[in-house]
Length: 199
Length: 194
Image (cartoon, rainbow over all chains, first blue to last red):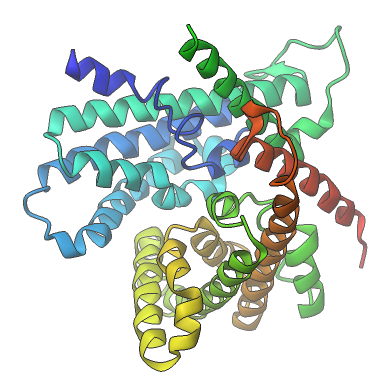
């Protein structure tokens, strides 16, 4: 039960982007297409799971005073691994995510989970927490990416879906569309949550 | 970008390619600290200071240490450690030498380590192959652009506090919608030709 709830909380009730409002840069920046969004989400999820594991294993070793720099180094190592792997095997994804791969280091979701969860919990639970948060983040990115790609480009994962219904609204793949889409998604989440709370 | 002269670079960084509205760097502090114009000013000043200083240090490190040793893959780790150490250092020095300024900026300084604009701009300087002077000017101008965005939003937010906002939009969602409208306004600068 508790292992399941550690995993599942990140996906809906404590979704890092849509509920906790952490790490809002990637959902704005790399969601012009659903494919980029998923690529970014999975990269961040890998870093999150691995850094949670290592932080949790070292939680009794790292002195309290230097814990934040230590966490940052651990996270930066895994980000570098992701960067090199993407560059070697999926070059076009690496190109379109660009700057935002190294910036996973400063994503507050990852440092936040290391500090709030992995530094106090055993390795397996920490990995489950990281996996749940990572998937929740990926779903949020995918939601933003789906809306923006369909409305802005008329495609979904590169397949045309809007061609005969309406002209694509270019605004949605431009920066303002990112802010508007995310704003409305978070407001929608608030509404669902409020309805749920009222029964 | 490397072929622009310095004046163009400044206009480009502040208006045309604003670090927040078109590059999406620094969204967290933008939504977090811009409740009042005075705190936005404090944060903005701290960011201008740290981004410029970080660029001044990371650029030589990349060109004189990482590139000659062919260790470009250590860029992420090196830069984030430099920035974290720098922020700590600036905090200690300011506390001893300019207590007044420290009092004003104090609480914003630690937050800057995880402001992705700092690391982002440092990496853009390298990716765009800017010269040292260009990198310094571009970094300072980007930070000024960030401050401008912060101030604009803080001004709007002070007014929003007095209005009735649909309950589901209160807080961050309305902030994002406002940012979207501001980003649309900034897109107007995209037509500027030199």
